[in-house]
Length: 340
Ligand SMILES: *Cc1c(COP(=O)(O)O)cnc(C)c1O
Image (cartoon, rainbow, N blue to C red; front, top):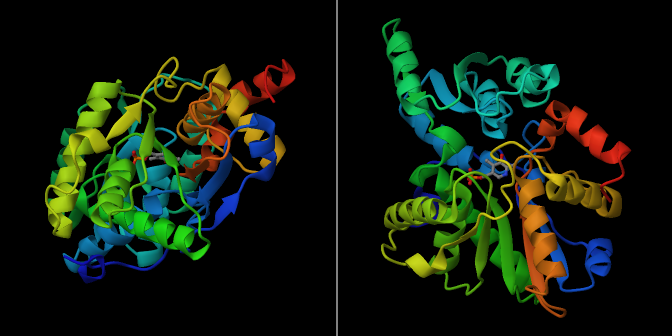
């Protein structure tokens, strides 16, 4: 089915800009690096979840929902964008935050995205790391349904076939922008977590035969597991879009060697990437997703895996609000001059 036939609430600032990163390209001395600014989707400091929520929230409204439940890690960008979207629609928002890092830093636990969740009027509840968050959401939904609420549950990261439509759309948008300026994209790089971004992108790219290799930089799971979950979601997204089978297993490539110590824990290469983008390009990355993806991008350039003359697009998925939950580790890295 054509994308325009799916219910959608047009709220994101689209198209997001496609810009050249002149100083970063010169610094790395390899390919021409471009950035697709999905950090500029416009909703409460922006980010990739806004594109998914345009389709998910439309489905919620179509079902008459008056309450949204979703979940994420403590510094979840997804829950923050969901809270903002729900505020805009006048719908109640319940958020379950999983303590995946065990950090007791006060800023991690109440500043950054957590502050914004609350500012948008969402109700948050915490759950221990390793909880079955889907089951936890179902329990909260039962509790609220018993009081007469019409509840719509959005999975973590908004990653199901409905949410992934937002990134099939992003693939169309990016290819259109590239066509308009005669740009042949040799590689597309993005962070990959709950899989909806990469799955939607690869489905969109394959559906229009764009022939752009896509690399997902993992932030949590090992390679095999990450690729399986992206492929599984891409297959279901392709089915929903009416082009079943268009994505092959080999089209799904994840590199999970920049995860470092674990989800939500930025290592020296991530902190360096954040400082490099900030100092050379005035662009804010985040410590959980885009900083790790950028660390992978920088390493690929340094190692010659991306070569001079090639055109590489980095899809910036947002997340800068999380910087304010990680000020201690960032300040320390800057002070010890291990970065930039
Ligand atoms: C959620 C998120 C991602 C990962 O996207 P998925 O669709 O979950 O794979 C990447 N970057 C940022 C900033 C995010 O918030």
